[in-house]
Image 1 (tube, rainbow, N blue to C red):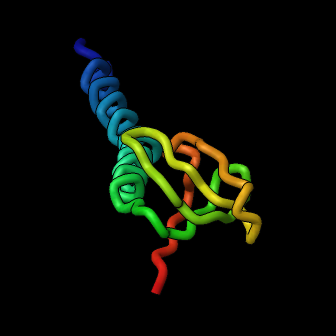
Image 2 (tube, one colour):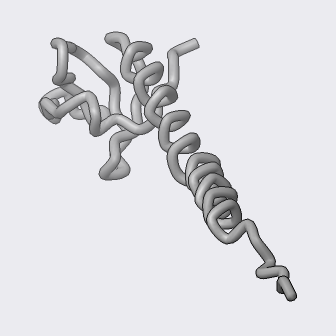
Length: 96
């Protein structure tokens, strides 16, 4: 007499693995790629005269730029100018 073994053991694991890979894509990889794209657009849009917020929480105005660094003037004191990497900027506000 033949007994059914339930079959499809390997097929179940393949479907399970594909499901987990798809889940990881939508939970981890896709949002990370969207954030990278948003930050790249932000870095490309920075121009002299823009008001910016740095990752340390300081607001300032961009007064000079090179490829990977910016010089930001903080507050109304014209002597407070700090060079920093562009990647330290988290928000840009264009002057009206």
